[in-house]
Length: 97
Image (tube, rainbow, N blue to C red):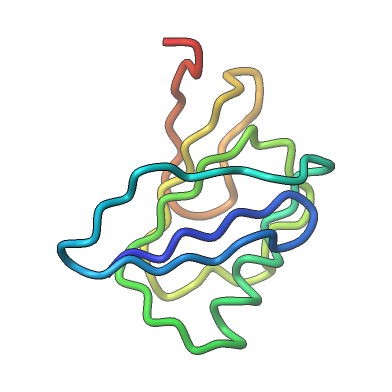
């Protein structure tokens, strides 16, 4: 399964897709500050099993969790000027491409 969580400064949507489900569109609502801590807290509070996380972000983040999770995290940044996350691996993409 894949769980897609959208978040700006708060959790906006949580959608779970099972094997065979077609993801036609992921809509991002909100906009207003980049925070990642709510996503990690939501995962912990709801006991969501995570094998791997891919986090798409502009990396304008100041609230990384104090402790790295026990699963791999790939940060995919849309802003090449920002540094790497304090845990996991960080890569960059050009959103206009």
